[in-house]
Length: 226
Image 1 (spheres, rainbow, N blue to C red):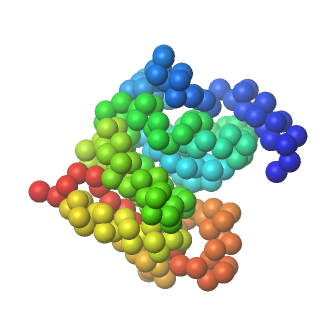
Image 2: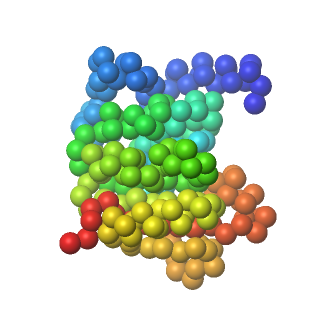
């Protein structure tokens, strides 16, 4: 994407009323005004909140919002030029149940209060293959601990990935922490079950499928089994 086009999208992003852009310094100084108050102050309903982390263009955020009109959907990413697509689609389709956060995912706990989020979706994140970057994997213990600060006790995490490394890593971590697994497949589209996760395919997912890559899917909770 050219620099001029990026700047145009950044400028248009400023006009969207459902986009929240915050830096670490802003969060430290003033906090986030909707933390713990998303339902009351923004969505103005009591519907479940579904959060997509690393949302990119917002394909899952928008797709789920269209399929689940009785849920509130929030996409989070640091790439504002990509997020423009999701913001544009939400406005064009008059979706009132969609919002986006432009910030680093490492700061996610600053945006949500305890027990505020019902589901987390992590769709095709960077698997961070270098050993020195394991802490940056979005299913690492560091991130799971952050998610526990705002995910409901009975809430679930969805992971959809083409990476064997990330899939195996996450399964091993789930087993080590004795977390409940609600669904686990190493080949989603060969699985005969009718699953919602099959209904939305991102741009890159379609490319990977055309190349014969297998898509892995995990759905799990964050509270250790008793």
